[in-house]
Image 1 (cartoon, rainbow, N blue to C red):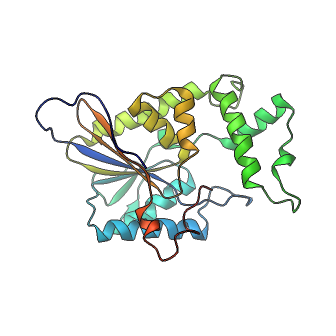
Image 2 (cartoon, rainbow, N blue to C red; image 1 turned 45 degrees about the vertical axis):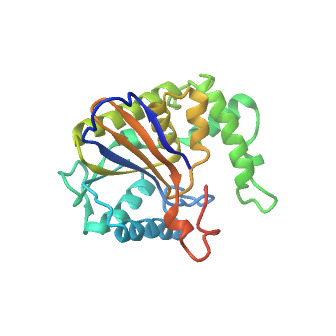
Length: 256
């Protein structure tokens, strides 16, 4: 976990700041026919986060999510802090969830299929002897595909170019900051690749650095950015205090 990493100037009088909490969705349904749904463990992870925020009396002025089901479901659980419900493009305050497509994850399925076609490495190799997906083999292949992606080797029909992905995430983050203004506490429910790109934007990381960050993010983790008109500061990265506080956190802290 990183704390207090800052971009921008340090000098000058204190300014009114806002805080964005970038929340990675809870565990999705890896290996199932429909990945884009929270697993029962994923729901528990987000419920622990919701309860943690309630205990510390975390102010929430607005909640955003991407349009993917796992992101929306995460936001809906957190919205129960204030009895909220999802409204696409909803109004201000914590009683609505504002969907923003810039927060959507890249399409890993298309990325992996395209990489398999170009590299000649079969997707069948990502399954174990029991025909179930092998998480370690999947991660290794995803990293290979990711490096090819940022190098521009997968810029074909159906694959969102890395530069376009990174630009839309940065633009979406800046748009949320502008629209929310000062002294706000904003929850943004998204995915690992998106959060990695957002942090990369704040810190000015190169492409590989931003992509590598995304591979370290826990499910239902908190990454916190403080910002004002001139500065964006990374305050907390990949924190899971709500899971670590449980009697046995080991099964709760997951990457996939």
